[in-house]
Length: 144
Image (tube, rainbow, N blue to C red; front, side, top):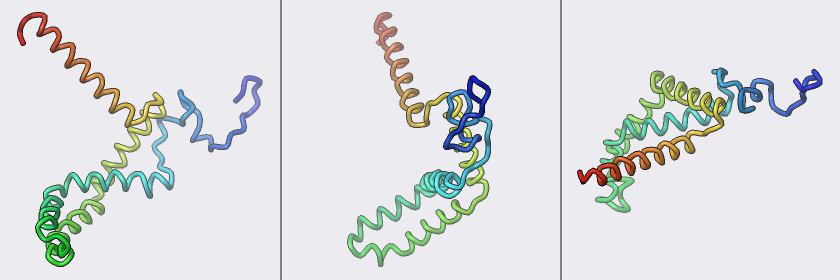
């Protein structure tokens, strides 16, 4: 609502606007179509890379050894790697975990206006600054 009591007209749906930063309701736990079909699967894919890392390394090693004929010689490793990834993609527990993480990150963004990438870089800067402070204190005390 505007100051004069009239409803404000916006392009976004009412659930997309509002909130403390004007970025949406932080408590909203509903997923839009793009979030369900693109953003959550991106996170699941990244999780699959972590879970199936050993198999991916084996496939990569085979590919480096066999060169251009890897498509033929590395089929067993590729099939095992793909089976692992398919298992992760269809695991409801992993999908729920990634969905919850996404919703938590979106909530934090809507609440503070700070995105995941910016938050991670800020945390890294704080860690570095903290480490520098500790080292400088130790140098002053003569411990280093």
